[in-house]
Picture 1 (cartoon, rainbow, N blue to C red):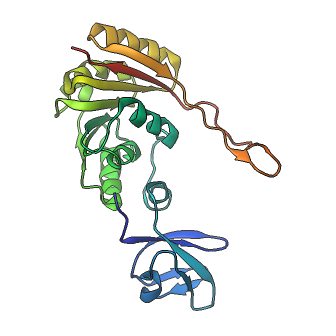
Picture 2 (cartoon, rainbow, N blue to C red; picture 1 turned 45 degrees about the vertical axis):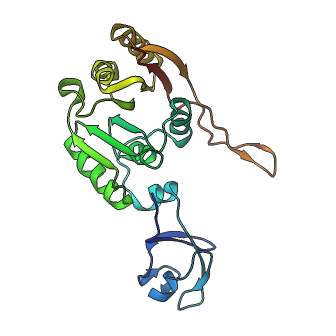
Picture 3 (cartoon, rainbow, N blue to C red; picture 1 turned 135 degrees about the vertical axis):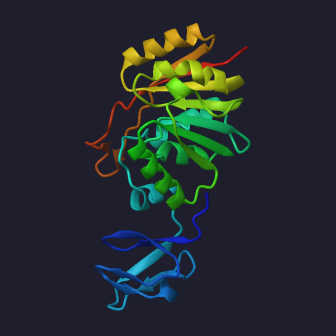
Length: 244
């Protein structure tokens, strides 16, 4: 995804995400249409002389400043490992069940060709579709559908990512939707879910590849020490592959 119509305004104290070429009113003053349309990397001033640098935003900044987050979402390090481990890329088609706020679907959409995302809760479907539109992701389709009962609307996808309650109940339809050689990945906050998914993998002839936990530890440079707010655990990620 490209965000050429957006600009990140980076000041000394605050950062804002706004549309390029629009007049914006900030706590630090007003920026004209000409100022927000300046080239990325430029420094502009508000009408009271406060300076802002113009930066092209990335996906994480669009998440933070533009989209509504109503649910917990897997962190980037977990999704990054899923992408690397399964090998999905620009030609891949993936399915994501448990859309939530669509952050997972949008992260995958930044890497793959097409994402079909499924959510059973109607109130989350509306938020997810609004977020997809706000991010400009024309390769994401959000479906209001219970995949446990109704299955997926796609077939022969390269990856099915499951992030929902009782996700082991969605392994069977996931196994039907994924192509031979493709992956079904279960995102499990607690290890009991991993065991349930492993049993389902065996039942529906998926080969369990690995279960991992990804750690991320932020550090302070001066003094050199781990940051206090480091999160030691997010979830267990169980990978299975369709070999038949």
